[in-house]
Image (cartoon, rainbow, N blue to C red; front, side, top):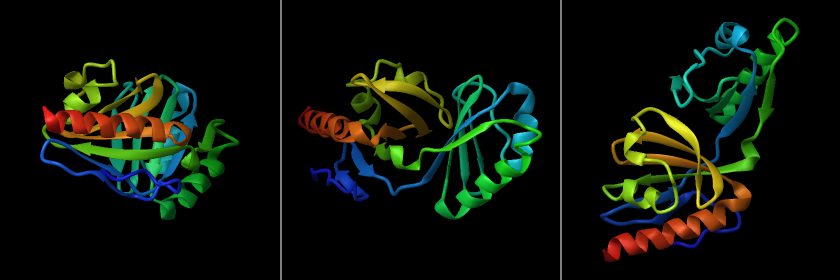
Length: 183
């Protein structure tokens, strides 16, 4: 196991046959709020069709979007695309009022993958992990900490954690990995 550094340096935290956990590189992250009637205009402006079903995800080039509520989305993209996204939303704001807030510094993301990934997440997450469809996600909690969980594959997940809670959650995940490895 590798200790989490105060700088949140990306890299592998746990490596094993049952499960591997890595701290991912930072991404540009935005919270988007708008009225349902304005979804088509914002979708056109940013170049991604905003999903309307809670938990649904959409992808286009460097942008990834998850619907977290009836009027709430989280957008992740690379740093190079963030300026385009901000400018696209600013250009339509007068006609389509909305809230686009940069939350990049608020969260860190860990990747969890391997045959024990579902068991590991079940240690701290009350959701039925098996029922989260591949290519979707959800807002949930891990040991009482608000998170966004993305299911990327059968045994591959991403967990977005508020930076201030990351040492706590990652510590629990590292302990869980040790328990799974020991069986």
